[in-house]
Amino acid sequence: MGREIVVIGLKNCDGTRKARRALEAAGLTPRFRDIREKPLTREEMTALHAVLGDALVNRRSATWRGLDAAVRNADPATLLAAHPTLMKRPVIMVDGRPYLGWSPETRAALLGNAR
Image 1 (tube, rainbow, N blue to C red):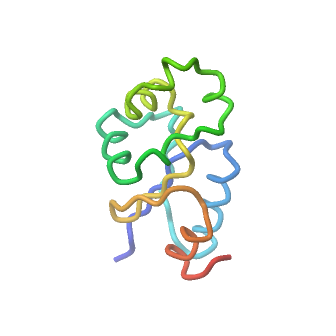
Image 2: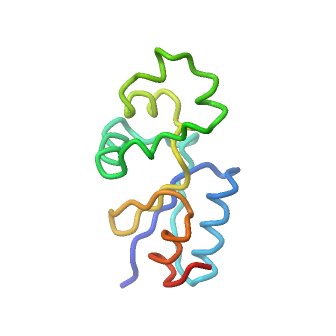
């Protein structure tokens, strides 16, 4: 039986598209969850934040730059629930374990190499 893989991100995000294509090219069949169409619940965000920490919030995004300081200081799960596009993408869940971004480390862990 294969691993359950869920790619969480935005369908128009370059990193998310690259991850999905590479996983499919490797013969894997990831499910995709667009956070605009089906946002993560507060509980899901809290659970991801507990594992991934503050790296889950993309502080380089245009969305982040558009927020005032008071909003930026909110609890990360609350902030991400209100602004789902602030989530660093993609988050790839493999059998319940999250990987953040499509970095060489994530590629090596999921594909066995750093391509």
